[in-house]
Image (cartoon, rainbow, N blue to C red):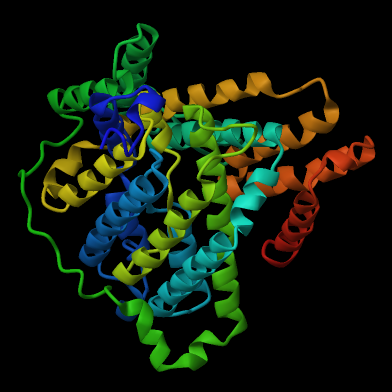
Length: 444
């Protein structure tokens, strides 16, 4: 195993990989609770029963999709990148595809499966890897930095440190609220541990935050240790039910669904893989070794997840938290996958992994990722503009894909105006046109 994962080359060991895998799992374990709530449209009034997916089945599908996805990534690409059903894509599925478009959720899952199939074809032809390698180095740094700001914002928002404000959009939350105080405590403790270079500082910070929450009764004690695994029958294989009525698949709406899943997952995945690779030091000459394998694993995970009954399974930026504590190989991803599988049997314990517990990890990782800002040539305006737009639009639009799209539209333009157009890969010009059309027809 040491030889397969190249421990010596990456200067790692079993302890670091296992700790990294556990840390990544705890950082993204929230998806086990959030995904079933979103996809089942829980709490949304007036929704017919046949439009709502079974929460228990989604929980199982989420865990299984994450398990299989992590195995694919760990064994095929050998990267410490974990996968699970993606946030944002699940909201698009539930509130746009099902509620707004009126497309049955079974047909929606078919769209997810097709998008994964198209991904696999693009990956097999090498096009996806070519596109990623065509992205300029400084734009990759901008993507990584922007994602750092984005996940920090997500953490601060989920814990109540940053809240909605009708006048200013966002503002500081009520800092004296117990849940907010717990998150602040966790951030301070984690920062102290990391500053002191304590091994596994991020993981230990999350553990201490959870313990503090239990002691102060801000986190309810788990009702048990082992719980019954719900049935996956209501969603398993539902993606193939629409083949009984092919007419549902030959519509403009269904095509839009496929293209949207394809678009968002493509660039969210590309941005995440690049960010994790930069954080772990995998990039060589502005190229990512085994990028094709990583992208292919992501494609297979999406198709598998759709069969189980969940939306697009994608690479998680929270993987950087595992990298931050030392993970460097696919073994960490496999450990994360095993944790998701075990979570099926120990679901009551997941109650202690609240947003206050995960926020410290997201904030500290955001700081680490923002360090890439130092290597961007800010004095070169033609580079500074697209980089800045990429970075700022991710948290402001609450979308990694939107930030990438905006920055990639500006980059060819500024480079062309400064007569540096020969330095721009033809693919970047093609992406610029595609992104413009995307905004016109999808967000127009």
